[in-house]
Length: 140
Image (cartoon, rainbow, N blue to C red; front, side, top):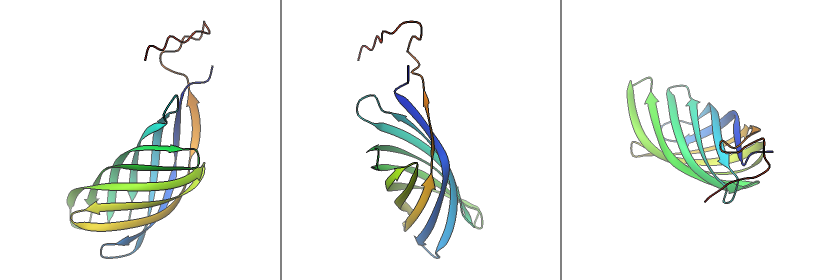
């Protein structure tokens, strides 16, 4: 029996503008999707730029080809040896290979990012499923 959850993992490449300079960044992101009823997800990523490392997580929802997400981001500025908290929001379009547009606000500075990514999905079995019987005792 296939599960009602899916994990994805993959690389992301962004062109960042806003702030002091335009630059490229690379990230690795993973996400957990619950697709049983209303699709929702939580993702986590780490992004590497020339002078910055960003750790982030977003709550997201979407349907197959498009979605939206938002959440906190921690930016570590390696050159200045400072860390700042911020927020980011992303809209995306995809089926395994996608495009996204991301807005970030960190330390009173707005950043805009356009990018592309690839994700490898893999299904998991539900934690509460019983593989020996065909019954699903879902009480919610």
